[in-house]
Amino acid sequence: MSSAIIDKTVLVTGANRGLGRALVVEALRRGAKRVYAASRQPMVVPDERVTPLILDVTDPVQIQEAVDRVESLDILINNAGVSVPNDLSDRSAFEQHLAVNLYGTLDVTQAFLPSLTRSRGALVNVVSLGAVAAVPVLPAYSVSKAASLSVTQSLRALLADRGVRVYAVMPGPIDTDMVRALDIPKTPPEDVARATLDGVERNEEEIFPDPMSQLLADGWRAGVAKDLERQNAAMVQVAPIAR
Image (cartoon, rainbow, N blue to C red):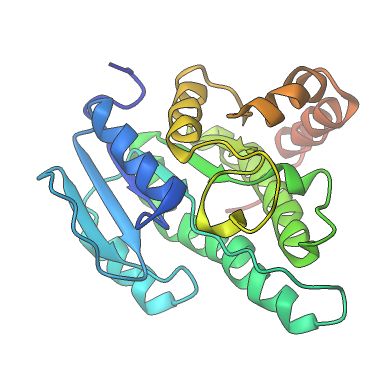
């Protein structure tokens, strides 16, 4: 079993279906001691190691209630997300996507950061290839995921001195309700969940968990954008931010 997961405590947001549920199952398969399965709707998982949590990532009260219930945490997987087709004419669509995909991720992370710091744990943000190449039929989604990637890169640099490892999962289309209507090749969520935790095990800062995203992996890791990220991260050591 994976040493990154075995006997660890894991929290997965958006855990009621699709990739989130697959991540819960995969964490259990790898020997997690406790998995907190967080979702907006009540869910039942027939495994005593699973603790369901009601959690809307846009609700500060529910976030705090979740923090109060989680005694300790080794791995936080920010998987909750929204994707609704739109065009560039509707500003409310951007606000809807940013509320969940950006601010929800950030607020949940900040709330659980004390626990992750104590455990010198890991933060896993499910981003998207849409963060680096916009999907024109999903512009608000693409914008929110680009912002999520930027936040993930900043957190990686800012949390390094606390011993918290930060990963960005960069999947292509996954065979879930979110993109079921799009006539494009999709990867089963179980495969993406397995490859995601493999990437955590291998300590890959960016995890490319499906055949489409794998085509970009080598170029990204050796590319100018990744090199620039490392250069910018060095600024934290030169001029650390009070926190």
